[in-house]
Amino acid sequence: MMKSIMTATALGVSAMTAAAEVPQAPPTEIYTAPDMQICEPMTISIYFQSGEVVLSSYAQSALKDARARLANCQISDVEMVAQVGDARNAKEEQAIGQDRLAIVAATMRDEGILPNSASARIEENRPDQTFVMARRVDITLAAHDRNIG
Image (cartoon, rainbow, N blue to C red):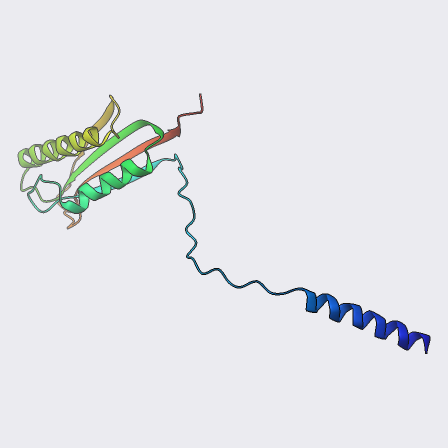
């Protein structure tokens, strides 16, 4: 009998505890995680139309996005490599490659993501490696937190 009373009391306490916990309503607003500034190495590829040296709107957006992501970062060790798979000869390859590197560097400078020194080169194309997507400038850069000395 005593065992029954203790069991009934324990069940009653459990039931009262469960009844006292009113579930909360789910949130009605969409949760947006705060943007975190992460300064880490980044590679950006800027593609060009065949034979062109003009930045597309997509390329301009990619550079603006990079600027936003690197807003509070110290940028160093920038390397730009042009691939000119659309050139018909070595002379044209050099001319188009230099022009593409120049326009990308100027835009990066305008966006504030190009430090004073950057290395730039044209990757030599071999005749057996003419790729459709080899009309680009690949930018590799290191980004560091400005607060770290």
